[in-house]
Every structure is written in C-alpha cells, then in structure tokens.
Length: 121
Image (cartoon, rainbow, N blue to C red; front, side, top):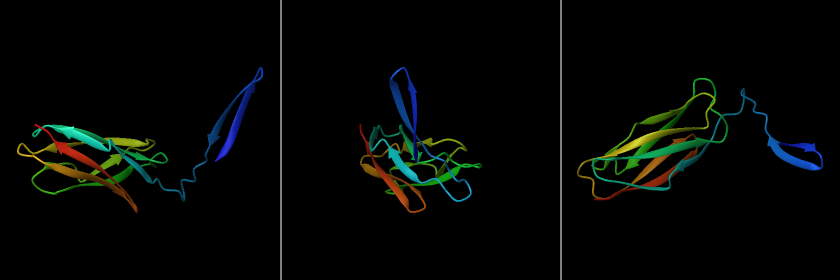
C-alpha cells in the first residue's frame, strides 16, 4: 500500500493505493454477512461473501455449506464472485419444517467464515 495525497488551497485528502500483482496474488475470503439472520420455514435468507481484492478473470468460486446438512435448508454448493467484483450474494432456503438453528459456512483456500441462521415461526 502506498499513501496518495492530493492538496488544493490548504486542504488535503489521503487515500491508500494498492497495486495488485495478478500473476501471483489471489483473492482471500474476508467475510460472510450478515453474522446472524432469521427466516420463516419455507422462506429464504440472503447472505453475501466478500473478498479482499477483486476477483480475477473467470471469477472466484467460494464453497458453501450448512450444518446440519439435511433437514434445515438448501443452498448452492458454491457461489462465484464475478471477475472484477469484491462480493457475491446467495440465498439459503429453509425447509418447510425447519424449526431450529443452522450454521452457514463459506470457504476459500484456508479462509472460512460462518454465520447463524435461525428458523422463526
């Protein structure tokens, strides 16, 4: 990171600039939000995964899972952050009979983030 300063008439603004080496630097998973969500049985909850740098050409695939794996809800096995983007969203659809709490997880390489999803009547 390099600080970049712009000045005009005695006022200054500073921004950090980072040059990304696409040949050797891959995105890292930095978050899964919200940390806690609620939905009615049969309904859906929306989650977002976030990267530290924009996804490269072809996008970046994030693995998704939930625990318990059966009897609570369904979600895609992965979500793709499109090329040039920092985030992507996905839905978890609760089973009609879901009555408990589950953990939703997102993983990329060694980075894993989890969130809690509650079924509420």
